[in-house]
Amino acid sequence: MAFLLSKLPSLSALLSAYGSLSATIILIRTILCQIIPNPVRDYISSKLSQSLSHYFYPDFTFIIEEHWQAVNNETFRAVEAYLSTRIGPSAGSILIGSNSLDPHNLEQGIPVGCNIIDQFQGMQLEWSLGSIGTNRSFHMERRYFQLTCKKSDQHRIMESYFHHIASTAKTILRGRQNLRIYTYDRRGGRWESAVFKHPATFKTLAMEPERKEEIINNLNSFVRGKDYFQKRGRAWKCGYLLHGPPGTGKSSLVAAIANHLRYNIYDLQLQSVQSDADLRRILTSTTNRSILLVEDIDCSTKASRDRTEIKDDQEEHGEDYQTCRLSPSDPGLTLSGLLNFIDGLWSSCGDERVIIFTTNHKDKLDPALIRPGRMDYDVYMGYCSFTGFKQLAETYLQIKHHRLFAAIEDLLKKVSVTPAEVAQQLMKSDEPQAILESFIEFLEIERN
Ligand SMILES: Nc1ncnc2c1ncn2[C@@H]1O[C@H](COP(=O)(O)OP(=O)(O)OP(=O)(O)O)[C@@H](O)[C@H]1O
Image (cartoon, rainbow, N blue to C red):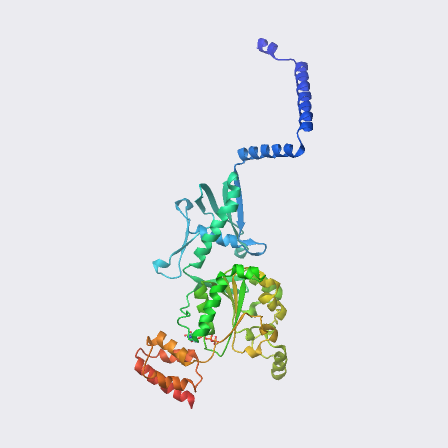
């Protein structure tokens, strides 16, 4: 032990060695500082710290939250759609559900806490779904995806993996089996959805063929039109005003549009909107590639109605005038708030949006709402023409010709019946001859 202690350097020798080492380091540093230019020094030190951090912290994490700047995060939706096709044994658990007992309708989703492994261009990518929020405040729950990868893959992921996710998700969402219809739950303060399975298509719709063709062409160019809209500095959206008497197929046309585009529908009752700020919040929580539907807009709120008419109605019926129900608290929704969403600055919020208003009384709407150029397409759904009748006969009776058609054509020129009334008559039995005879009788009665 004593031998070992005698071999150790003395304290003064250690201090002097430390002093000369420090002096040498300072000397080298000063020389390097003088001969190596600043930018080169910065480059070397950043490279050095990068390789050290890669060594000590090799992973990188991307967080994708459900909302982005107070609106729905489309990247979150894309990841959700994409990952639902990547769920494998590593997940440990999956969500299963369906809207019917048909086993083919079984859908799968990603539960919170689930881990999913994905491979892309040789990269190993680990996904998980997390959530912040408590059971008690379910509405406050915020989900987020977390992607963990190698730090060195970070740029490749930004440049190509997220593009791959976006394009795959687009295809998945376009081809999705079930559409959904959303209604706004004012008390819960959020959209509630149900599966939307409406059988109406453009094929079954009784409408003038040229008009039908025109709408289909417009919708097809709309879907392909991102560049078209961008080049012209316009928001990627289009608006339809559907008007005409009850039972002429306005709702059926909305369903046909949704089925054609494979877009979900957000069915908004303007009565449930309390103010312009409320409208902004509700509409920014809808997703892209969707239809915003406001049915019977003339009855929804004072905001949309012709101001002179409201005054006349109130004078005639008193303050309690209820023909077109208004919110008891008289919603603070204003016409300008509404217009802002149709073609004002807020209309540019989101992509690929179709806005549809329906009304039985176009004449009751405020002129500002229907001035030329406000809504892109004005579609009048009228009484049943002979062409409309033939379409309905084909749908309901599977016949294209019949000797009684001539009499029906003649009567339809004199009688105003809605396609809904015609459809009701054609559903009375399966036997075409008997049905057409009874339909002629019905038209004769209507004429007198
Ligand atoms: N143009 C049409 N083509 C095919 N079917 C139609 C048409 N119009 C009405 N119908 C039939 O009548 C039913 C009611 O029509 P729909 O609800 O689409 O009319 P609407 O114009 O929206 O009526 P409302 O103004 O009362 O809401 C539909 O379910 C459909 O069966």
